[in-house]
Length: 351
Image (cartoon, rainbow, N blue to C red; front, side):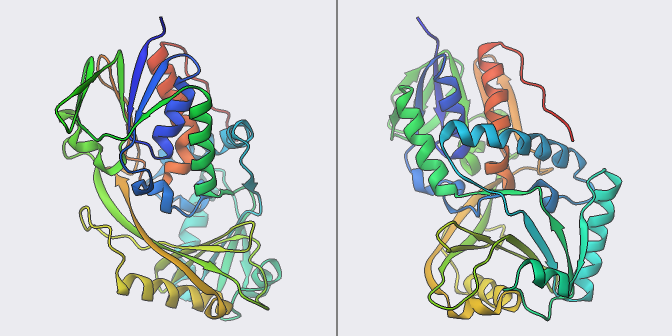
C-alpha cells in the first residue's frame, strides 16, 4: 500500500509538490481557494539574475539552480517558456547608480551582464522611452505564463490521481491534518505549502512567514503599438516596476509591495503608481486596454529564503518563497520529494 500524503495549499508550490509525490504516493491536496494563491497573480518572471542584490548570495545561487531545472520541468508539463530574456532599465542617474551596484555584485559572483546605453536598449526593445538613462541585458532569464502553468499542473495532478479537497486546514501535526470544520484527514506525511497562510498551521512557523501584498495589472495592446519582446524590469526614481509580455501580446505589469497584513483589495494609489511609472518606461502603454487589476499575498520570510524541510517527523514545510515561488517550484518539489520518500535529492548543476 503506498504511503499517504496531504499537501496543504494549492498554489504553484503545493501543486508542484503534489504532482511530484503522486508518482509514488497517494496524495490529497487541500485547496479551498485556488485563485487566492500568489502564483495566480504573479508576473511569471524566471529571473534570478535581475532579482539579485548584495547580501542575497544564497538566494542567487538557489535561483540559478532552479532556472537550470525549468526547461525539463516545463517540457514535462507541456508549458511554453518565454526565452527573450530580460532588459533591465534605469530611468535616471540615481537609478543607474543602483543598477551599477547590482552589476558589480553580479560580476563578483561570476554572473556578468552586458551594460547598454539608451540607444542600445531601444535597438533591443523599440517600445522603450528615449528618456531612459541606461540598462542591462540579461539574455539567460526565462518567463512563463503563470496561469497556464497552474492549469497544466492541476491537470497533471488529476492525471496522477491527486485528490483535491476544497476544505481549509486549521492545524497540521504528525499523522493528521485537522480541518476548519473539526474533522481530520489521516496521513503518513503532511506538507505545509499554504504560502502566506502557512505560519498559522504549525507552532514552529509562528512569526517566520508573513504576508507581503503585491498588485498587478494585465494590459492588452489595441492597435499600432510595437510589441514588447523582452521582459522589462525598470527602476523609475528608485521604484521598481516590471512588464512581462505574453505570447498573445498582452502584458502583465507589476508590482507594488506593501506590508498590509492579509488585505487583498486593489488600491487606487497602487494602480495609479504602476501605470504612471510603466508609461514613463513604455510610453505606448497609454493606448493599451486595461483588462484586470488584482492583488495577491506573497509569503515573506525573514531573509527572503524559503523555508523547506522537516518541522518534525511526518510534517514538512515548503513556504516563504516571497517573490520567487514560480522560479523555485521545480527545486522545491524535488527537495520535498526527496524528504518524503527518503531518496537522495538531485544535485543542482552550476554555471
